[in-house]
Structure formats: structure tokens, C-alpha cells
Image (cartoon, rainbow, N blue to C red; front, side, top):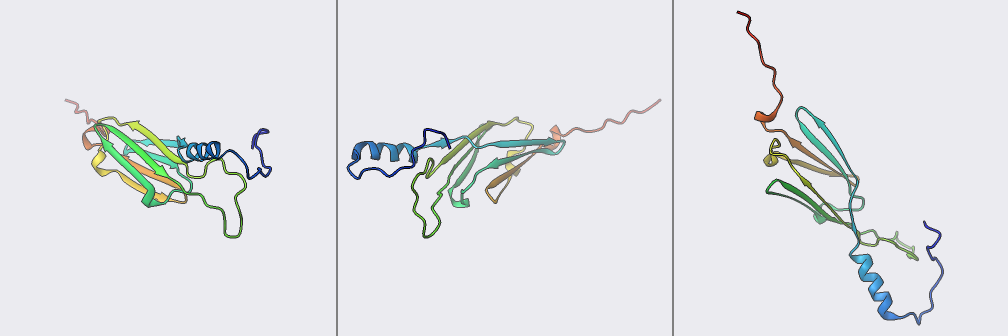
Length: 137
């Protein structure tokens, strides 16, 4: 938390317009999630950090060599507790990638577990490295 974060109670006579504007800005906060990319001869695997995102609020699209990930998390306060300060109440995650034509986008496998999205994108057979046999003769 920064030293400028205010945790004190506010007067109920706070300007309604500024409060509504702050809520709107908090609702529209877009976060670029952290991504780890692992590559091998079979393809690439992306690990995307999406804490608090349910499967229903996750949208992955591939079009014209571009893959986009859009997600929305809803982070609620535990039962019996009241939120006094929240910097990101409903974060919107967004990230996009340009994919090489070497990858077979029709065979992308996506799994979401414990706030981490795992995307496996295999290489096309024609793009995989292969060993060339040399004949002596």
C-alpha cells in the first residue's frame, strides 16, 4: 500500500459526483496480466495470471493471427466483513498476442485452474523441427 492511501472514514456529505466518478474509474480498470511463455519443439505454453476470474467471465479469441484474452474478476469481501478500501473492485484483464503462422491455432488447449490460465498452442506439423537423414554414397 502506498503512503498516500487513505484508510480513514469519510464524511457522509462527500460530493456524490466525485464518488460516482471514482466508482466508474474503479469499475473500468484494465490490468495487463502477467504472462510466462515456455517454448519447446512441440509448441508454446502460456501461463496467464488471472486471479479471481471465473471461467464464465473469460473470453479467448483468435482471429487473423492475433490472440486476445479478455477477463473480468469480481473480488468480494468475505462474509461478515465490510470493505473499507478497495483499489480494484472489478478488474478487467486484457492481453493480446500476435501468433506466428507456425502455430496450429485450431488445436489450442485452454485450462483455468487456481487463477492461472494455461494455454497450449502446438506447432503445425510442417513447422516442427525434423531430423534430415544423410545417405553416404
